Length: 88
Image (cartoon, rainbow, N blue to C red; front, side, top):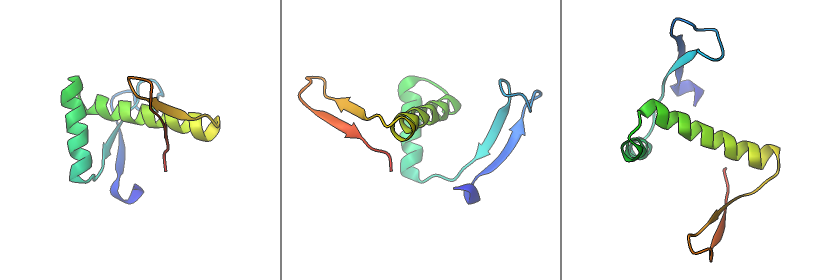
């Protein structure tokens, strides 16, 4: 993905960890764009917040599975079905 991503720092306090903003330009396929738009509209949030949440979730799952060796499980509402979430 690095070949399709340009990254620049933006904002008056660039260089500080807490207040630094990074502007990204990425190429995504229409299906991914639609999923992002759906989530944005469904939750009533900005596209920036949508991406932030997606990255936070990916980070959580990756740390729990790869670094800690834990499993991420999805349980149905009725409790009868449990599936394991895998990231490839």
